[in-house]
Length: 485
Image (cartoon, rainbow, N blue to C red; front, side, top):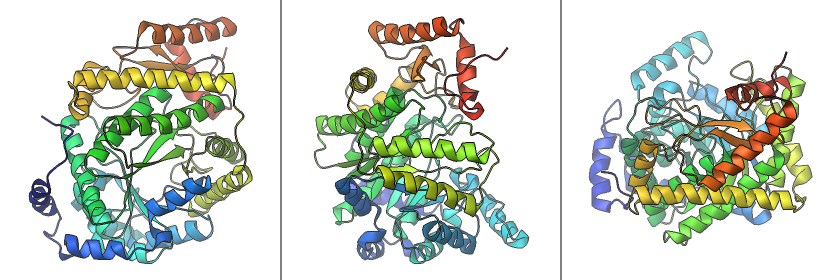
């Protein structure tokens, strides 16, 4: 039974021996912990993710980061250098390919070889494990910005060993956020254990005086996710990471669409993450936020897509997100060109620069929405604590099993999949069907009232068709969906 308890050093080191044998060619000398510590201690501040986030927070600015990754080593370095120079990215990613996400390293190796033959990437990302410490260090040596692995891997233990030994100072993901939205039938108890190892590795480095950033994946399924649900998952993963010794955490949120609700969600997320970390006894964790630009369907027209990117950048800036993950004008077509990726970065960068000294005006609407989100998060976390008899890890497993937490449109069989979201008339994300979600009658009545107002104003029934219309609305140029006659 998984428990939210720090792994002992002895247990960690014994398990580590098993993990390293997963390497396709066996143990690798570059993964010696003492040597990795020496390398990481030499990372300059401008290439250290955690340090740069601290500086951004101190200055009150929003930094930008793209998604990017290709199969070959030279191709990946060329791509990142382009995004750094032409796109003016503050942080650099290495988006990992799908084979590596599922620990299918031989398939990834075949993809690398075939990509070299054809002169283009046949993988949808960078195969970290196959390139190993030597390859990942080569990437680090050839860029000037901090590196982060972004992947979606349920079991990222070997991957995490490699990236950190290669001086990459940030890793995205968590036992919930890289399972329920990504996998079909992988045990949640197992993935929480896997990510406890990932976080214990970071905790080990922290004990040696090396600060590494960890980032739970905020958007989850990225489609009409109510803020309280995504915020709750981020807070739970932060608590579990802190227990293993992580001291620099970036909690994420995916753009919902209504500016007031999005800013409220960012504020509530940071406030409550700090609150619950301290409540559970973790006093010295540095918390920042990341805002993900629109994760749903994009307009096909490039000008309209850039408008959506600009809107997202405005929200991130006014919400004072520490970091923003950017999109491109090619989102509706597939994998973007490096030029399109840089264009999205530059568009975002201009907006964040223009708004860096501006603030969103306080209002009764904003304050109400912050309090509403906090009330809902409190309800969900209380249910997790009760389900686990005080243990967050076991409570998370039980809460998903019972549907007390439920993520809309997630593929996992461990997710109840009974809730349905929909927008109110102002475009704020509400809940249409609650399933077993751990909300009080008062909270449910609030959501019902908001959707009833929309139904009345649109002269329609409260039904699943609202959800369908809202899923497609943004790509068609609207926020609140309408049924076309």
